[in-house]
Length: 356
Image 1: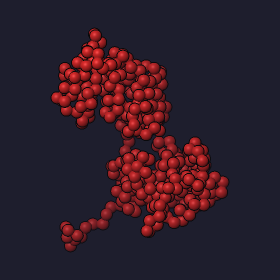
Image 2 (image 1 turned 135 degrees about the horizontal axis):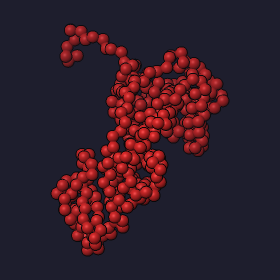
Image 3 (image 1 turned 120 degrees about the horizontal axis):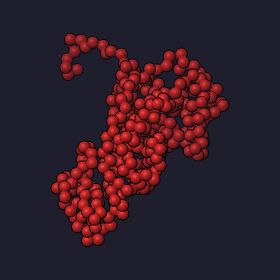
Image 4 (image 1 turned 90 degrees about the vertical axis):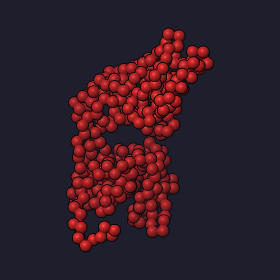
């Protein structure tokens, strides 16, 4: 019995294969050390052959994508519910683009499946960034951390699907709109306050605090705190892609405006999540487009307000400050978007000491 890994990822668990009553069984040992995995595999094989443990009911490759997705949504406790839902939707759309449904065997997840989806997306005018994001989210269902959840389903080798190359992404720097355009949007926001107060609150949180749409929709007054030198809004770790909490300073006039239009519990004065989502993703987005704000590469309009906020922080306080406030997982993400906006630093004088 020779343990093997499905991926070259560091600390990936070892798998073993053996036969029980003429049927091949694949088992994830959950061990990252070779000899520990071998001992665990031998132990499980003995128990399986003696009938002391239940083995997979289907041969390798016969488990359906639907069965895996159900297990993923029920057992992947390290992933929040909304993320799991969207990851499953992404995988379903990849299958649909290839004329397949969720009832197909997991063995149908091949490299060609990814290539076909990419070709269809490019033909439809989608950006490489959006296509690659789609594929990454679908693949996360079969991540190293999730694979032990499917040990009894005896999945096939998914390395071709997981290692299919992504499309080359253009390296594009963010170019902020002209200052007069931004000034015009802020001037018109006064009429938005009277017409759609909930959308106006979303405008303040996106343009002047740099929150993502999801964060805006779920923002509560309990996130807003007063410190010794002013107001701050604390984004909990669960709402940040970096999985870390972050603090954002609120200008006093922004806090006053939010108090004037906000709800009792949520900063958006709507009782249900769906109503808050409509106010941001439909009402505010439409208002921005009507006033000349174009969709970004990801197809989102409200997100462009956050990007402009990020450009202000990056140019005034630097890349690391922008990363901290925006909640990017690494400085490289922030640098990719905003490094081109930074001016060259002043030359260092000869009289400056190394320890200064």
